[in-house]
Amino acid sequence: MNLLLIERHELESGSRVTLRDRRADHLRKVLRVEPGRRLRIGVINGFKGHGTVISVDPGQVVMDLEVEEGEAPCPTVDLIVGMPRPQVLHRVLQTAATMEVARLDLVNAWRVEKSFFQSPSATPEKMHRQLLLGAEQGRKTRLPDVTCRKLLVPFVRGLEDTAPTLRLIADPGASRTLEEVVEEVVEPSLREVERFVVAIGPEGGWIDRELQTFQEEGFVPVDLGPWILRVENAVTAALAQLELVRRSRPKAQA
Amino acid sequence: MNLLLIERHELESGSRVTLRDRRADHLRKVLRVEPGRRLRIGVINGFKGHGTVISVDPGQVVMDLEVEEGEAPCPTVDLIVGMPRPQVLHRVLQTAATMEVARLDLVNAWRVEKSFFQSPSATPEKMHRQLLLGAEQGRKTRLPDVTCRKLLVPFVRGLEDTAPTLRLIADPGASRTLEEVVEEVVEPSLREVERFVVAIGPEGGWIDRELQTFQEEGFVPVDLGPWILRVENAVTAALAQLELVRRSRPKAQA
Image (cartoon, rainbow over all chains, first blue to last red; front, side, top):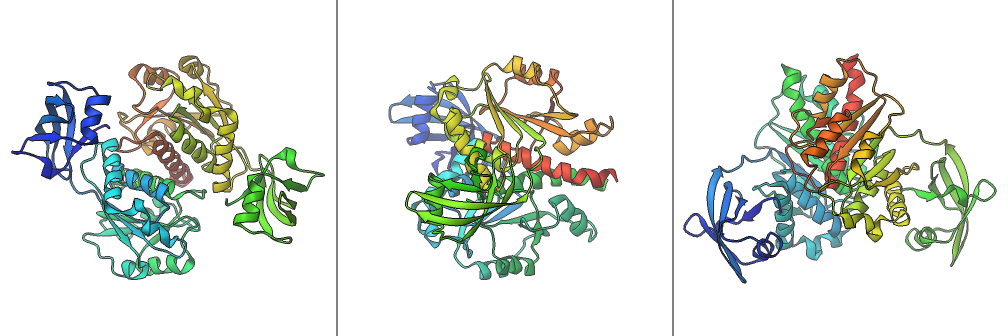
């Protein structure tokens, strides 16, 4: 736990919080906190700062919080992922929270096992818990907005951008790297891209018809590397490459 | 299983193989193969091709193999990773095999729990099995050469390069991205880099003294992105970014 996360509704009179769940256990048993101990805290979709332990009792830990940084800006990357099997879903959710994804749409596809949507791991509560673990790991206060989409085509056809967006789809058959897509697609049109959406197929990949639907909606195929990656690795690889390309762009344009 | 992997010593009279373990079970129960069925096969550190099923019996599956591609060239990236906890070790091993790492040194460090080296997951047999799973996933025939290093400093001091090598160490405090390191460190010296070594810290990161030891041996700190990543994600992110930078280099120099 690199950051102690607190839900907004847990704030009492603005700056005091009483923890009674796994966080209280973690503070008492793992960190062995005592009154006066200061810890990094973050309020979900709210401020970051430090908390000072006021009292420690078997059932609860009370803390006073100080604001140090305002609400984090909304992240600029959305993910669309073919619904993975439960174990992989856990890690995809954690990674999405750690690596600051704004929206995560878990979609159906030809090669998705339909039972994955009914898995106990796919309930909103269980998914929220994995997001919290990922955000705690990454010291992030923003949780991705996660939605399950059982109908792929209407979802893709209905996507709307809130700002100029580069739509990408990971495809091992693609001829261009992410760097090349940005050079050849974005820069010639002098398009100011503010947001990114990346679609990652299910285990086994997208079928041709699905790839075509995405391409009809402006998704540009991108080759992440000469590998057949598990879904969770493809998510990490895509986000890592996107970060690198975004950070090297301003210099290239200067 | 995207590729059926066979050990060299299993080859009978050059091209016939008799499988009796989990692979035979997988062929019979999951793929339900019958005589005549052709499958992609690979020999570890050997050729790739197709195998034709000759006979299927409850205890065994016999196949004849055809060579189509010679031995894969030795990959050019080595990893040094702070020894992770057993569950994470499994995934790091799989990812190293899927993403074609040549050598993987699992090292001790201040923030590594010493018990991780004694874990049942860290035996050569268990690690080999995870490498096989990763190679099967990635359709790779080369397995990384994995070694546990309980003494960090002598290991780092004793590293020798077999070819011009760029040594990198992932460090969230680094000021340069991988792209910038290549631009600012490699290109001005017109150094022809043929190989890469990337060091990834344990959970909690390297301590300053460790970072210093690596830097004294020529490791250049590199920032993978604004995240605190779990070890397995840092491995994937580093390999993905390295691939992107390597593939965009020839063009940038042209």
